[in-house]
Image (tube, rainbow, N blue to C red; front, side, top):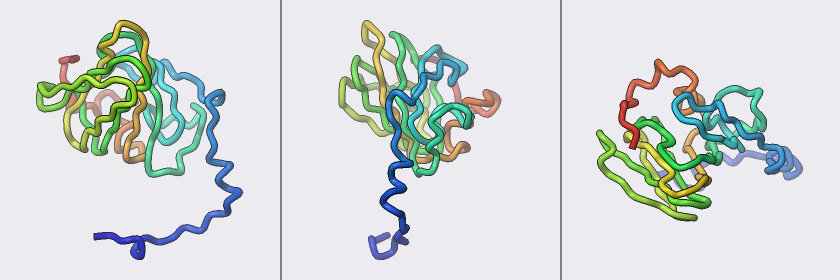
Length: 165
């Protein structure tokens, strides 16, 4: 078991934390991040939905990715998996998260509920509400190969099914 004594302490100048500030007005919506469904992605940090560094903000020095998806009613992803943990927290609306070999396990979550899908579990999500809603997404790794890079090359989506839940 790792203890606090085992973790190497990183020396950071407190003033450097300002460089890690991301203001909402500096986060443009990316409507082209996903090839399968039309949805807006706000990427605050990490590589969520894209490894393209031209999409600001470019705050990638982290062990997590964080973003918000905005979408109308309907399926927002195909059944797929990642080598990372993925956490979903609705900011508004109702979202259905499904998982399992055929997406047979399902739960509907509402504002500020949370579900964490472990690595290597097939998952999908859908806005099951009546209007546009936002879903916060946190991924346990900011490295492109762990999640985001999959969506830039559809041929790497080996575990995607044809079924949208």
